[in-house]
Amino acid sequence: MTQADGAATVDVCVVGGCGRVGLPLGIALASRGLSVVLYDIDAAAVDRVNSGSLPFAEEGAAQPLTEALAAGRLRASTEATSVGLADTLVVVVGTPVDEHLNPDLSAVPRALERCAEHLHDGQLVVLRSTVYPGVTALTEKLLASRGLTVDVAFCPERIAEGRAMTELFTLPQIVAARTPQAMERAELLFRRLTDSIVALEPEEAELAKLFTNTWRYVKFATANQFWMMANDFGLDFARIRHAVAFDYPRAADLPMPGFAAGPCLLKDTMQLAAFNRNNFVLGHSAMLINEGLPLYLVSRLEDRFDLATMTVGILGMAFKGGSDDSRSSLAYKLRKILRLKAGETLCTDPYVADDRILPLDEVLRRADLLVIAAPHADYADLDTDKPLIDMWGLTGRGVRV
Image (cartoon, helix red, strand yellow):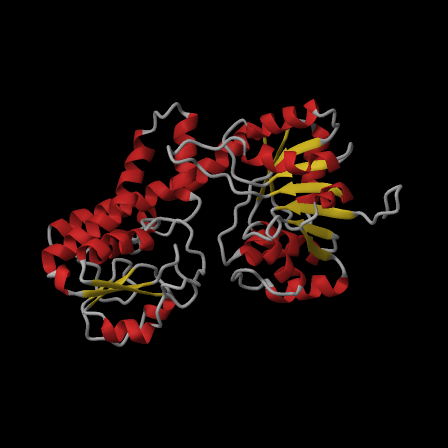
């Protein structure tokens, strides 16, 4: 398929296409026969993708990336003109909160404005980012104000990092649009991946995504608060949780304690709070519990050990187990506190790239006290006689601190 000027066109352009959400989506669509261009302003990531290398760890993505590149169905580009070559534009950009925990409503519109001169009538624009309620409508107004006649849909991503190449094909896709035509086009796109489609209005879908992440954040806060209660009375939460959940379906979703971090859960809980005029006591309480967990942990360690004279080894700097992603990881908050309280603080992680990270064997040798901060499976069978703090219950030795 070609344009009038002879430039080759593609089925889909993913804006933010070399990131942890955009790249798996692009690979998945290419694996189902669509031609895809990944537009990204990160030149290093673009070069890595075009060379057949993943910029981050994502299980099951390497081989289909290689195959899509070889077949000519996928390429990455830093050229904004790429968006004009596509029938469908999928916008996957970060939507952060600012230093006051207020949502940045302009992240998605800003990404579109960067390339708006290359958009054209007849395109389908799909918002895939997690957005503050009303951003889809704001995007519709922005595009209309530029005289563009395009279809707009909101279809939020739902994947967990590391499982994208499975979940993109197995999880139901939420599809929302204002008009029947936009809904039909968006549904046809995602039926390339799955037959399970949930149709909503845009504002319903925006809230559905925020509710999903906030529900997880609140559940983690509940488990962390329970863990602190048990600790304060000298009891092992892992044993209590086992009794609560064992063959008892109504409590099966009670998580183990641990750092609830990463780029989404806190941020989206705060977006939901802002949407409700900051009247969200449950969400703000969850933030205080989860963000306060490193402080609580260090306080308990101070009660048990002479931290000022000890070297503490932090095992795992990623925000979750099995990941190489350290964005918003509370392990770094723990490190910052321990640098004030302990004699020395050492960090290790088998996946995260950071010049402050040391080999595991060196940390095990030098540390007087060990804290598992990310539940990497690599730490489940640690061979050490050093005191080991494992709030995740990864090693099966109890979680009492």
